[in-house]
Image 1 (cartoon, rainbow, N blue to C red):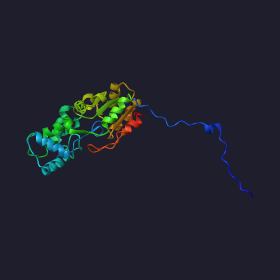
Image 2 (image 1 turned 30 degrees about the horizontal axis):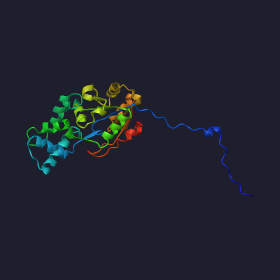
Image 3 (image 1 turned 180 degrees about the vertical axis):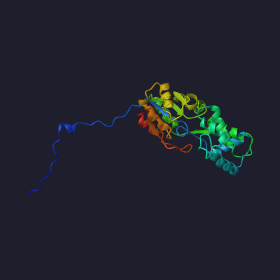
Image 4 (image 1 turned 180 degrees about the horizontal axis):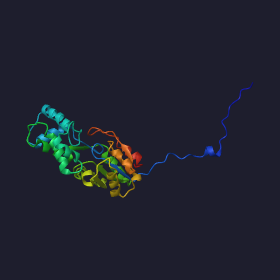
Length: 254
């Protein structure tokens, strides 16, 4: 029997039709978390040494390292959650992201649970979180914000925080790249409450369905309930890339 060569079936008009790709919602605005997304607090050792210096104390590195470990366990603003919150600080802790006095009181109170032997040390430690030198913007922060601005994409910072971060962005030369700030202690709502994301969208004048929220915690994913898209990035150490450039792909900017 002769060999038979199988030929592919003739294509029909339907087969030749170009099928559309997956749909993508246009992004007109991006909401960014602050800590862990755009910037990270300074290394613990640098934090302790700077605070001690402000108190007029020259700590050796061994003692400073030991204090840093104990203070991190107690709880640091912008750092790990405390292992335990003393009952006397419970109310301040619960309200820390809603009122400036509660934020300061909670974190200075936690620092005071560590016997450092340095007068005014708890306040000096807290002051580091209020100044630009106490933070390190991620390497991609400026390029990503600049690219979004050039592409006409609006930007807001949405943060659970008890102090004003605007001076930090001004000191870093990034203030002109931010269109609005929705800070929990000013808005009166904390992530994951959809209200804080909706407020940010209102500040920018954009529809939540055309907005992307970028953060590093499950609380940031609360933006889904407000109708926003969400990108959750891994938190990275100070000065190390955290994948922020992925925002540009999703926003189709750059």
